[in-house]
Length: 302
Image 1 (cartoon, rainbow, N blue to C red):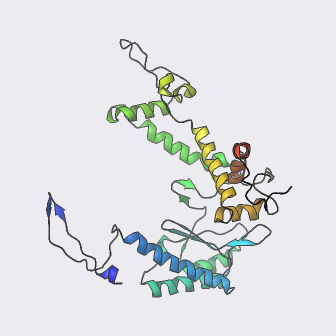
Image 2 (cartoon, helix red, strand yellow):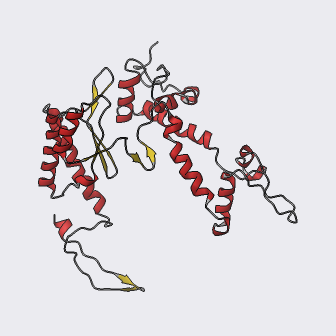
Image 3 (tube, rainbow, N blue to C red):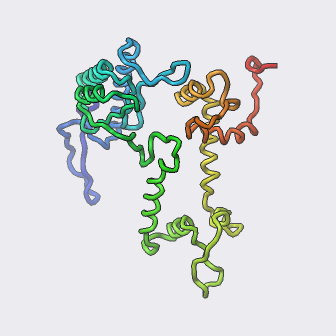
């Protein structure tokens, strides 16, 4: 609390530093110490949720046959809670939030809360939970950073809004307001960029995207091939699962898709999730270049 309450600032105006002053509410957003204070508070909230789960008061979302469960996820400053849709479970969530408010001194803004129910929920139970928590209901899962959180079988429909929004934004851009680098990127995206070598014939001609992705030294523009770049990012996740088997991502995928094998030998079925099928589509990139480090040989079956 001394770190929070002893904050002082000064304002630099036209190169001249003003007098020091102390804010009446202590630490403000934007201070270098503010993110660390937020992490400390969130760690306390996570501890309260884990304690409720250990006591059997709160259940998470079960994953796979091993009954591995998740009851909360934190993304920067967003929090997602998973639990059984009952009045008893909702009371536990409410009590945990109230305890966190009392301990930390922060107040939770329930106007920003959204609750999402499963497909087989009874309408009367839904109404009781909504009245108990006092939150709004979301018919569809919220988007995170402009992308859908859940992607079902209709992936084209899930990402259609993103593609349309991107196309509309690009169409209203004007080339005269962009820099030389911006012109290259925009015109390359629109698949219309290729100036002729003869300066007297200035014009834009059609060219293949594969040609634009070649390095400039061989006549291309050096743009990234988005398809290959996406494969590289997916292969990075495969290596992460192999090298860090105790991380949350590896535990969730193993409990759901390959409880008795590894990611390189796991089977892929048509009804599996879009994310898992995408990760498995690049396993050959890792399998072809992977090597065994023998060490003591304890983990090698001879």
